[in-house]
Amino acid sequence: MKKILIGSYILIIIGITFCIENSDLFNAKNSKSIAAGEKVYNKNCLICHGKTGKGEGSKAGTAINNQHFLSSVSDKDLYNYVKFGREATAMRAFGSGVSEKDLKNLVAFMREWHTEEIKFDTPKTVSGNPEKGKEKYNLYCLTCHGETGSGKQRMGTALSNPMYLRYTTDKQIWIDIAYGREETRMGPSLKSLDGARQLKEKDISDIVSYIRSWEKK
Image (cartoon, rainbow, N blue to C red; front, side, top):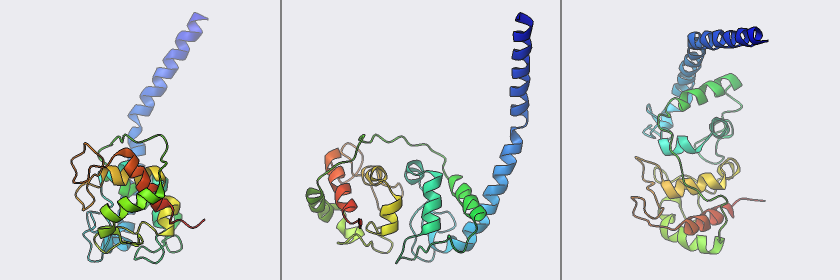
């Protein structure tokens, strides 16, 4: 019995060693996917989001090469944003013109920008008062995002857009407001952070509830 156990341990060690030694196979596969995704990006996204993905394209585009953003979204979120787009905006739905493989490669390319994993301190549930949220929205958010949340070019994204509301969770919206997006106009709003707005957690939850009220049921 003892010999059997020793033999099993040896096989396990050999298997682990083999996986480590051959991990380059997976890296090579991912590298090919990233390279292919870069081509898709340059063809379809560069004009708006820019060469570095920081929104510096010739046409208005948001900053997607952003550590706060990339730390708050999953690969599935990125996939949905690209596939379904944002109706009535310059961000068209690419699901009908780009293959599934290319969409996944594009996500791999964008994920390569993610170099810093940021941990966010968020409430377990986001629940607020939309009426109070409206007051705070008009005071702190309206200038960039517009009275109806339709957004303003090179200033603020369209928060009331159906596709944005469908594929963005309350917690993600809360994170965006609380922590902002580095190197953009969207600074942090949570109290104790280095931002002009010093809002309490409840204030931010109220704003999220107001934004969510734009969603058609």
